[in-house]
Length: 346
Image (cartoon, rainbow, N blue to C red; front, side, top):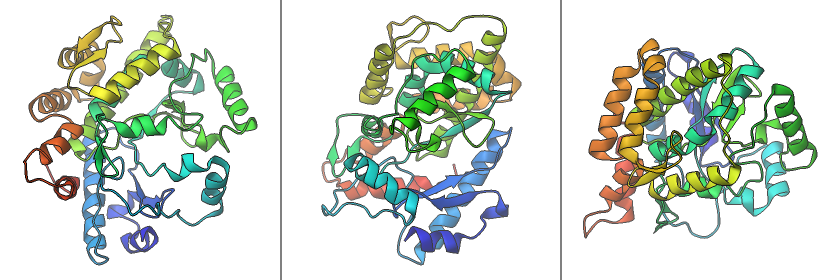
C-alpha cells in the first residue's frame, strides 16, 4: 500500500517534503526540508499530512501519526517493504526486526563540525529522557494498555545499538565506536547505529532519535525547539571549556525508563539536580535554562505556549487515554481521535 501512496503523493507540496518507504509496507516516512523557522517546518509537515489523507482516501486508508500499532492484529505480522536492505535487516535481526513496527520523531540540528557534535552528544544525555517524556505517545500496543506512556521506547531498546552511550570525548573516539558496532555486526551499517543521539551519517547535524512520533504537530515543534536550544546551550558550554557532567549509562537508562513509564504524569529525574522532580516544575526549569537560545531563534513564546498546552491538555499518551475514558469507548475511538488529530490544522 505504501508504494501506491508514495507514487500518488508525487513530489510533495512545493517539492519540499519527501515521503518515502520505511521498514514495513504500512509505514511512510515524512521528512521536511531544512529550515531555521520552526513555523516553516510545521507548515510543510501539515501540508504533507493533509495530502497523504487526500491521496489515501482513494485507497480507503488514512494517515495516523502514532508510534505503534494501537489495535490488535490477526497474528500474521506486518509485511516488509520491498528491497534487499530490508530483507537483510530481517534476516540478520530476526524477531527484533519483525516486532519493530514503530515510528519515532527524529530532529536534526546543524552543528559546525563533528567535534562540536560529539561535544553536544556527550552533554545532552541526561536531557533525552525529558524530551521522551514530552513526546510520550504510545500507551496502547496491539490492543492492550501497556501501563506505560511510551511503550515504543521500551520496544526500541531491543535493538543492540539503541539507547544512551558512554561519553565519547572526541569525534575520533565516536567514529571508532561506530566502526566497532558495524564490524561486530550490532549494526549492519552506520545508518543502523540507533543511539538516542548520534551524528548523522548524511548531514552535518546532531540527530535526536529517542522521542515518540507526535500526533499533534505542536508537540513535535516543541520537542524540536527544545532540542535546538539544547544544542546551542551545550555547544556554548563546550566552547567555554565546561566539562560534560558524569552520568553513568545505568543512571540514564533508569531515567529513560521513568520517563517512558510515567511521562509527564509524575516525577522525572532532573538533569540539574539528579533528584526526582515534578514534571511541570522541571519543564519550567528547562525553559528558564534555555531562555537565551530560545529567544535568539524566536522560539521563546511558542515554547511557553507549548508547555502551557501540555499542562492543560496533557501529552499524546494522555490524549489517547482520554479518548478511551468513556465507559462505552472502544479501541477504535482512539484510532478515530488519532486520525482527526493527525491532520488537524491547529
